[in-house]
Length: 423
Image 1 (cartoon, rainbow, N blue to C red):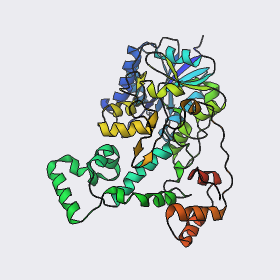
Image 2 (cartoon, one colour; image 1 turned 60 degrees about the vertical axis):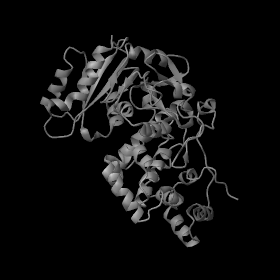
Image 3 (cartoon, rainbow, N blue to C red; image 1 turned 30 degrees about the vertical axis):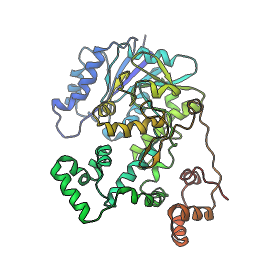
Image 4 (cartoon, rainbow, N blue to C red; image 1 turned 90 degrees about the horizontal axis):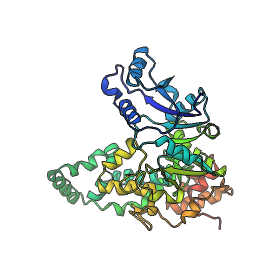
């Protein structure tokens, strides 16, 4: 009899024309953890071989899985991201429930699959996962864009800003973290700041609102974040998550010019998987290594993703391991992104660069079923007036910006100022 549970593991091929043993390390780490920790329940393991299109490469992959019962499902590398590969594989196998696992995962607890399935089988539960988050990509990306924008204004060097966002500045403005590398570099930067009379970053902060209002208009470089629900935005992360085949098939991957953004919308967007499961009247549950199922209101204290020392994680991945290696300042920022004031380590209404991640909304309200939000039409004149106010600009400039964004959906524009009401 075929198992009714399938476990889909994404073995993503490393980049490069010729693979070496090191290119299989992530797969080996997963397989070793899979063998080390008994799943506790019968299942069918399916290896999604993404990009392994040569016979020799598939043979090498199978060799790693020797003596481990499994099937291999090959998908082209250009199929898309992990969710696209999961969707393709799920259509080709017969199962009632499935657990989806990404490339860089390592299982940490015995009977891990049984713990997931038992919690999923409880009345009213629609999806479970090894980790969840309250993060809103709108709010997080607004912070990151503010960091990027501020350093472009050439402010005086701020060691706390550099340390707290070192991972981000290393990608967008490497010159700004050079002073962290040695006392000599810090002295050089301090002298330059004095000679050039550079001001503290806070003196430039007010101008960011105008920048953000323009950047998020239709066609702007940040407009893709407008549709994401604001913080707190509870969702199950798209790794080591489990649900029925029927539920998984009901949510399509949003079409987007940037397929990665589409996958982000699938995970935590307004029409994504988590919100669709909740709108259908079912609960989201995070399952810890202890086997306990944590409902939404309990997530910030579950000891899982970016909670405390993460010691209760059922499985780790590249994101959780990266968090473990961060500095105290970087952890604070990431913890704030994930949990804001709901975190036991933060509390209240923490701010990052004057942007608030408040815990004002009661946890039981956050856990309630989200509704499909409708927004009243915003007239062109309302847009102009709003842009004049938030952008501190002339009517002519505001009219040009309104014309630029006139094709944007009314819903997107309303989200830019959720508390806005016509006079």
